[in-house]
Image (cartoon, rainbow, N blue to C red; front, side):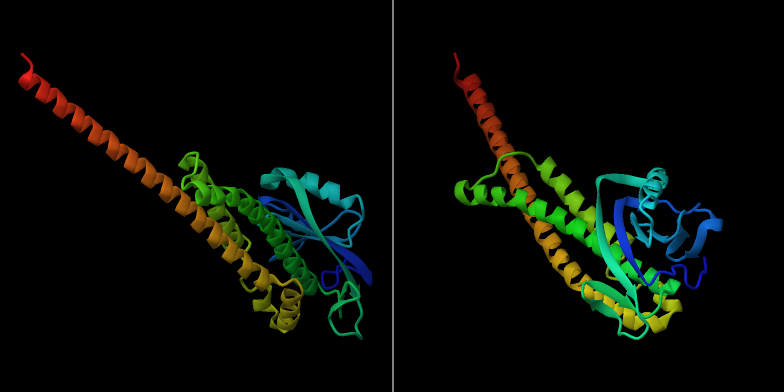
Length: 265
């Protein structure tokens, strides 16, 4: 397998799998490694896999038996494994004479060089991560709507603050994993060494709507977090007011006891 062109097929499939929150790839065998940033490895039976620390594996031109074998191998290296594996697929064709871009439902590339394949894998990995968190934030909004309706109709909400604080923590984790670990809005490190691929990266980000989806998700995250903080503040205010009434009642009771002691025969 040539490092410069690890895939010889002119038409193949790329499949991104979101396995968990993090992959520990520090001790991946050098003998199987084609590149380190991002980690690219050979697959048994042909094809390659590009592995990302933020929990995504992208298989390119992989035979059917390669995916379950890779999942099994990555299982002990995966932190916070997800029960269901989210996936995203993309057909790729190598046609030197045609302009690069999505055409007829497939991504056309002018060559199958390693750096190009890594860049495609990185865009696909960001897209599958965005899809995962888009679904999660949509579920959070579904939980928030009934609370907002209850607040509008009755002027109060039931329950305690712990559940809302847990949700705020979950939203902060989402933001941390997208910005800190997956670095979705950042320029791929690969481009620092291969600036000639800037055009392909811009094309991929545009095709997958990476920045637009990230901006929309950021707005939803901020709205969800602000809503949860508002609910926590309202509950805290309600609890504080209740404590104040308890204090007033205790003071009044103490005054009554004092008066009773003064006037009792």
